[in-house]
Length: 211
Image (cartoon, rainbow, N blue to C red; front, side, top):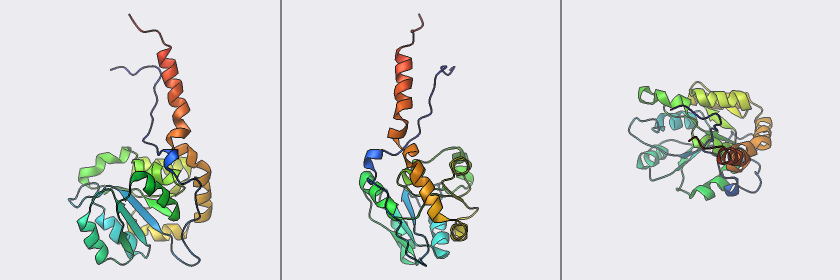
């Protein structure tokens, strides 16, 4: 198929109406390590959502990590039971979860990029937009599209391995990074881009139909 002259890539942005009315200060107290959150799909079968090694390495580095699975994840409860600093939280409705996210300092976004998941490094997971729209910087592993998002927007940190996250955050002005994300959070919502979509529909509807 030949793409039309006018086209628009509309990402799976967060709905601004579901966000906390205003981002709150992160939950980190003076002298405490940043709090990391992950929300979304999980698996225990070696697929791209098998993040057990990620979570073990992050918590093992001394960063507290809360995980909100989108469905029951027994293997992760077992992992949390033997991993200090790792908690598996109750599953939340999407809108309720978005209102919880601003209490954290950074959101973990990366997949398990093993051989069976190498193709995923050109896709942007919707959780990245949900963290950013909630005011959270994102933490990115080996994932080309996410690395490009951080480089272009300046809204997160990139690490080679999950266990490097604590050192990376210690070298980052997290307050300034969070302020930048808060200033740009509207850019990662449906409402922030709806004008472009409406304009595309308007232009398409007004175009002559080929005979």
